[in-house]
Amino acid sequence: MSQPVQLIVKSKKKKLKLTIDLNASVLDLKTKLQPLTEIPPSLQKIIYKGKVLSDADSLVSSGLKNKAKLTLVGSRTQDVISASSYVAPSSASLSKKRDEEKKAKEKVKNLELQKKYWSCRDRHQPIIKKGLPQNAMKAVKDQNDPLPKSIHSIYDPNGDEVRLSFHLDEQELWIATPSGVQKMLFTRIRDVTSCPIYEHEEYHIVALHLGSTEADHHYLYYVPAQYCKAIKYMISGNLNFPMLRHRSKAPTTKEGEKESK
Image (tube, rainbow, N blue to C red):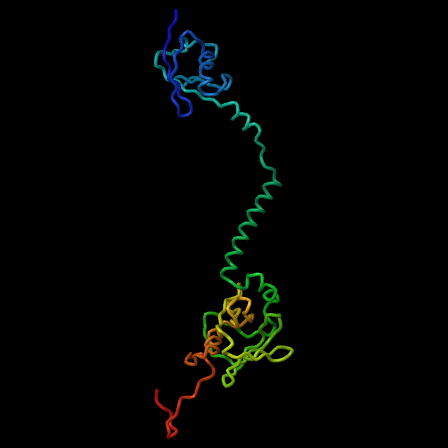
């Protein structure tokens, strides 16, 4: 005698309702569920009250009643194929991936360093790689000192060691090179900027701005940091800067006495 009932089957967060005869087998139920779930009967498990039902048993012998709630567990054929075809990466490919990730991180780090430090940029690397000049002057970071008589043992853009001296009367910067002395008028220098050298921040790269573009800059390398501000103020003509070696004479009265400030 036919006993049609409605069953509620939960499968992957979905609730399926279907009508079937209680005299049908569990396999019949699985066959009826296949088009609804795309899971073939052989990959289905029907669970009722915590028990996995056997294919050969009838629904009525399994204790099912109208509105009974079942759970379907199983995988679609394509999911099984995808899982079985997965190949774990080899140690060589894992090593290659780690190397690529390391290179990517280094590239990001280099870009960040290039933004912060001129010395990390390609155009300055040939000079920076020469290292600190053999007789380089003692350098101190985060300090401003008076200009000495001259600043020696620094590199010019050609990588030659040069000596700087400042001549206030002539309003000139003298750069003594192995081949001679280059004299540069203060008025020719539009600005002076500097940047610490990476991992040697007590020394700076100093840029003398001779034009409006970076190509017009005259660079000096391994300049002691404590003199950079005094160099800028000397060349700019701001003689009130306390760190300057040279001091302008105070104007005098007709009697020859210095005027009080």
